[in-house]
Amino acid sequence: MKHLSLAARYRPQTFAQVAGQDMVKAVLSRAAAEDRPAAAYLLSGTRGVGKTTIARIFAKALNCEHAPGPEPCNECAQCRKITQGAHVDVTEIDGASNNSVEDARSLRETIGYAPMEGRYKIFIIDEAHMLTRNAFNALLKTLEEPPERVVFIFATTEAHKFPVTIVSRCQHFVFRHLSEDALAEHLSAVLRKEKMEFEEGAVRLLARRAAGSVRDGMSLLDQALALGGASLTTAMTREVLGLAGQELFGHLFEALHGRDCAAVADLSRQILQQGVDIGFFVRELAGNLRNLFLLRQGGAAVLPNLRLPADEAAFQQALAPRFSAGHLHAAWQMTLDAQRGIVQSPEPTAALELLLLNLALLPQLLPLEHLPEQEAVHVPSAVPPVQAPSAPDTREPRDRMSASDGQAAPEARNFSAAAAPRPGPPQQSATPPSHDAPPSQPAQRPAPRGRAPEKAAAPEPEAEQEPDPAPVTASEPAVPPAVTGTSPEAATDAEADAGQAARPSFQRDWQAFCEFCAAEQAAGRPAPQPHLLRGLGVDWQEDRLRLTPKAQTLLHQLEKQRDTLEAALAAFGVGAPRLELIAPRPPRGEAELIEEFSKKPELQPCLEVLQASIIHCTEIK
Image (cartoon, rainbow, N blue to C red; front, side, top):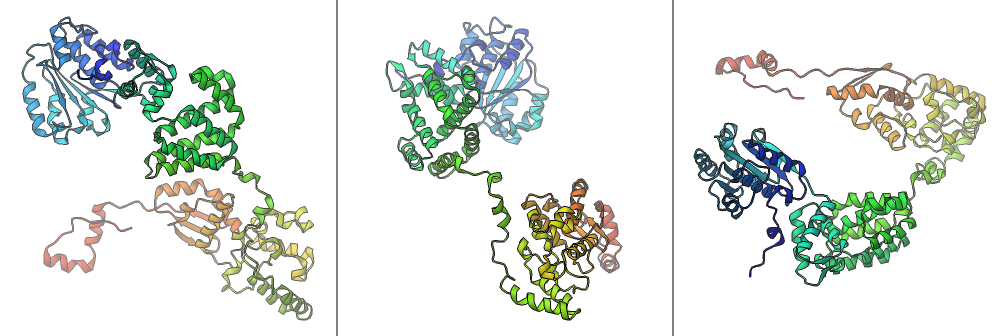
């Protein structure tokens, strides 16, 4: 005798027997009871949630001999014929194989005839998204003004492929996934009808594996029962479906807790050898991490909401306190983020092994705020300083020149400022360039881009007691008296004078300012977004900076960051120029462009000789 699958054997025959979809069942049952069906229905949703089944039940309810009524009787000749697929007035069409415009035209020709046996002529088009656009267009007029006693029912898994003109002519019902509890209850009812003993953990495992699809759950149950046995156990279900057991997860969490990379690699090899479904394994891992996190935070109070079997609940409740809440939360987030990548990876086993190793080593990752502060200070000065070897040779002659020749001292100071490295750590601070510095030395101006930490000013007590609020002075380290040969008071006065006004020799370089803003953002300090500074029209004068964006949206974003932009300009060392944001010129229409282009003198001979005219013109930006 041919085996009949559980999905076909226990297909619902009434609305009440359908698992889930309460809203759809209520609407269609009331339409059948009041004998007021719509001209067309669109039933969409994932596979195996009851679209075709409810369409057949609705067809039986409309054509039942005892209609109108909320449910079909399933006993009259009309109901039995529809159940067997032999009713002349109920036509089921496969949209994948009857998708041409000729099929739609032949369907439209048969619609005009009145029902022969039943009360309604019903067309159920399954996988309707496979119809071509021409076929949909052929049905537009029929759906808008259908003949009396004709009902269309479209069933599809991809409603987004339907033309809007078709959707607007239908009552659209979206079928939802079944919850794990509802699906487990449905599978338990089937097992009771089969008089088969079962474990609750096995049924919940099948419901979790089916992911909300009733047909998938029935097929998996049929597959598990094919092995035989007096009862359905969790261990047998995992073995048949190729799922990881609780023992494997126990070893995995022991390895994660002990940060044992060798054990994690061995578990990855076992998963590959046992043929475990990697996609479902990652889903189960994410579910276990969620349960552990909730148990770690809420304790035994959350157990009723998790709905776990007794042995699994006891195992996870004992395991949760061994991990910190932060570790479990981060591991849960990493698993969810990596799930799609692992399933779609050409090497899913290697991707899974990498994820498990990352979870094991997760507690060793040090947060940035815990880094030693001194390390962050010395990161920019990892390259050996350039002027350190020549410092002893240049310092003595400069001191002698400043003592003997009053005109040679400025040159020595300029040489020292030009030789200093741009990021300059505190011990290599350079003096601010003088007013007579030649403008051909751009290297001495971008000093603010290598901003030193605030601790660089610690060796000078005077600077700490009276901090200069000017951003230029804060970004340039103070000059030790030994370098310039002047007193600390004179150095402080000269530095304050330099910070109050922009230096005449400064090169207004917009590219350098963009790089400075990028460096400020990388260092965690407030600065404009680099993408806002690219592609602008820049007109930078002595006391004015005019920016012209290409689009109105960029203008709005620059207006919002005006304060940040002005602060960055001050920190860059240009004082406080007047910032002007110019609105972009609105795009001109094609007619205006054609008129302007036609008046060009060089085109007049060509247009007159050829008797031509310009019909299309586009502005090049």
